[in-house]
Image (cartoon, rainbow, N blue to C red):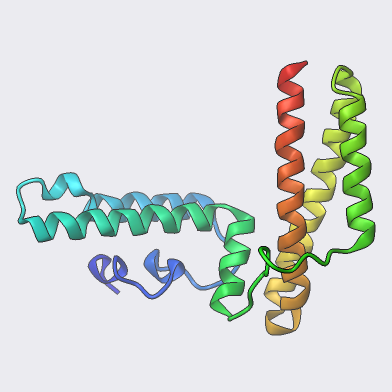
Length: 177
């Protein structure tokens, strides 16, 4: 597939000439993005027709959006599920594992009670990091399993969204101390 053909690919993986799958070499992805963006970047079409400039902008936007999705493990997993016709149902499905939700509530309480305690915040960060890494490893395994793993992958994508929000709150609390 030529670089020009990749700019109009059917999916983000094809756009970068990558096999469809969760495991990605991020350095290779960045390299491929640089190569493709150099051929499609709007600055290269400054003297071209209005239609060619518009297409260059669209191609660059598609490349940048694809890069953003593929660089983020949770977004990449969600995208893989979408390609397989599996909705994560984040907007409508509110059912979550009760043990996971209880853990989230306990962490949030601990965060609120310890905003001025750097040692406890660091401990919470360690717990959060370990749980997030474990969930991401589990997610990768379920996605590698294909359709049989999609229900669990769907659950883990939703849990990782919760974990990401809590991680953002932890980062903010760290900055305040």
